[in-house]
Structure formats: structure tokens, C-alpha cells
Image 1 (cartoon, rainbow, N blue to C red):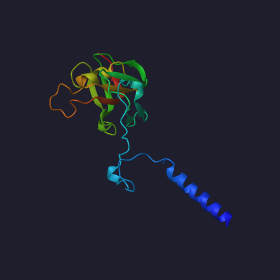
Image 2: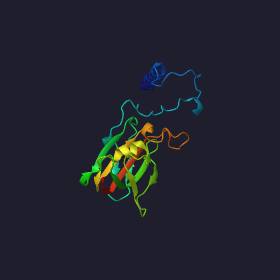
Image 3: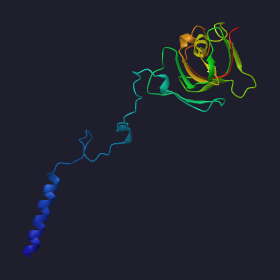
Image 4: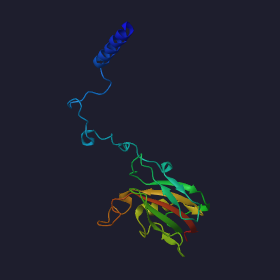
Amino acid sequence: MRKAGTIIVVAAATLVLAACTPSREQPSDLPPGTDPSPSLRLPPPQSTPPPQDQVCAADDITVTGEYGQEPQVRIPEDCAAPTELLRRDLEDGLGEGVDLSGTIEVNYALFTWSDGQLKDSSFGEQRTLSVTLGQGDVIEGFNEALVGMRQQGRRLAVVPPDLGYGEQSGHPLQDETLVFVIDAVRINPTE
């Protein structure tokens, strides 16, 4: 019987100590025994996009597809749209480059920076776009992007709004940075 009394005393002491031990739960303003409802719980922290302190370079843009095929473009989200014309040759091409008064026939694909969507393309059509440089046939940024292209060359060009449709009030692409992938199909030398 003594052992039973000792066991009871030890059990009671253990219960008293357990009741006095601080809880590992977070403190709450709710009365004891109240279960917090889901509406009182804080939502998980929202992920915020990284700050765009850095301006993108032409090398930050990914272009897939080969010369003659309609390209795909991936525009990065971790840097800001450039404010000046960017050019990068994806394929060098052959022969002499077109000069400021030459004529060039091209295929092109136009993507918008803000959403990366294809907005216009001449790939797959039966004819190319013919541009005589310096004649005002196309937006200024596209004209400048063509200078120096060589036949069978492919070029990436990023055109800020002020060299694109920025001056054309009401144009749907007025405030857009434009991303072109251009294939030089034929260069017609200056006469």
C-alpha cells in the first residue's frame, strides 16, 4: 500500500508541474479555451515582384527559333524596359550591311514588352516587308534597327516608345516598348 501511495503522490506532483510549465504556444488575446477562427488568422505574406532597379540589356532577352522561322521571345521580369534602342545580332548574315539609304526586304515578328505577346508577324506570309531606309516608311526605331543588317542575318531590336508609336496619339502601342525579331531576306544596294 505504501508503494501505491508513493505512486499517487508522484503522479500528482507530475500533474502539478505539468500545469505550471509554460506553454510553447504563441500568446493570444483570446480567452482560454477559445479556438481562433480562420478569419482572425493573419494571411500568409504575399510575394512581391523583385524591384526593377536595373534596366534590361539585349542579352537578357531570350529568342528561340532559327532564321526563316517565326521566333519565340521571353522577356525578363526582373529588370526594367530599356529607354534607348537596343540591337543584338542573333545571326550575322552574309555580304555587306545595308546603309542609311539602301533598301532591305525583311520578315519580322513584333512583341510587346509589357506582356511578351506577339502582336504582328510577316513570317508565314507570301511576301516580305520592303523598307528604304531614311524614307519614313516605318517607325524610327525599326528604321534605325535595320542599319547594318546583312542578308540572311537575324537581329533582335528593342524600341522604346519615343522611337516607336509614342508620337502617334491614340495608337494602341503608343506607350509600349516594342521587341522585334527581324530576318534580312534581301539587301538591295544603293544605286
